[in-house]
Image (cartoon, rainbow over all chains, first blue to last red; front, side, top):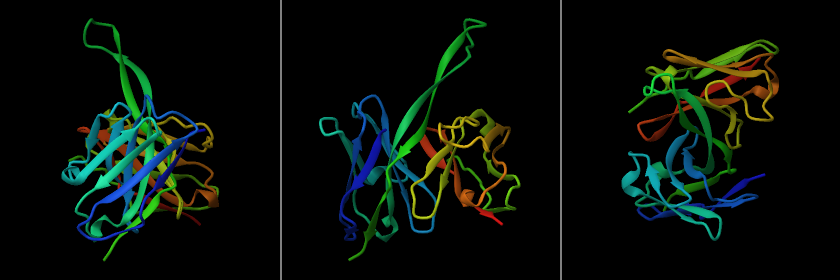
Length: 135
Length: 106
């Protein structure tokens, strides 16, 4: 089955750039969305952003100015860069796959017809990697 | 931005039924997913699209979603169900997580 593994430095200095890679094994990176999520110590989950295998991205508005997510399909990897880090960026960072589901729902027109609605959920997660921001 | 509200903690006696709620404005119109996270481990999907169980998740886990509240129900609670539980929805082009609920099995 598909497995994800995060890798990268565990310690980053303030104001520098955090760089992590997620390696996908047991399956292809193609045809899926891939997300980064983080969890500060003792706190909840925060979505950072996702990338489609084709390279299109979407970021959390609260982090958008500092985040870049990229993909390397030849290596079955995707990566996260978070710039200008502070102590508040100290967290466990997870990568996850977004699985796509389909639902047939009533369509407005033509009357009585159905349309396909897609939804997504995170079905596979990496084990996480701890990143500490400190001088 | 959209907010999901979960109780900080829920307690349940061994073998009884636990219910964890996730509140949000008209959440019934959204697809809600639930994750279980045990200490030191990554989250695990336990319910997707309101009430669907992934393969390998016990039937004791079920979900519902209506109005302004989604609920994760754990029947016949076991010691191994002790964990943090997070609800999640997609809103305005972003994933949103609830703050998490710590389930204690007494």
